[in-house]
Length: 175
Image (cartoon, rainbow, N blue to C red; front, side, top):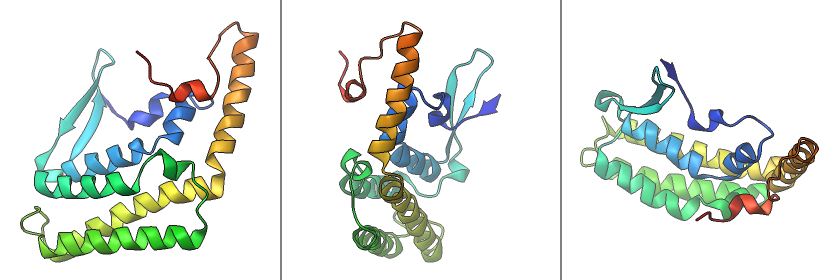
């Protein structure tokens, strides 16, 4: 059985990969999995199975909810497609880190952290992950890059007789 990062299942250059790269939910999901002690394995039949190891969990459910609720305000598609300058990014991440640090350190026992120092470490790691989302958007011109990548993929698919529906169609709800 192999351990997986769910985003790794999409071949690079595919519309699914582009959508995954533009979706900050992966950052949030990854943070949740680390905080809750969740890993994913592939079973013998190729199914992806979540495994929860409570001993690996960084926080209890109340602490995880605190972090996730705060992240909902700071991490969304608008961020990945944004054009914040480095000073704005630093200010947003610093504010997030300060609030999360304060809340986790003051309630470290209540939130299931091992110590106040552990609570601060968790806040730092969460803020670092969020900074990555901002930096990916800023330094990589993510939307432009993904758009170009998707156009190349579309061109190849058209040659092969596959119709993907266009770049923006990736974001439309199906159903």
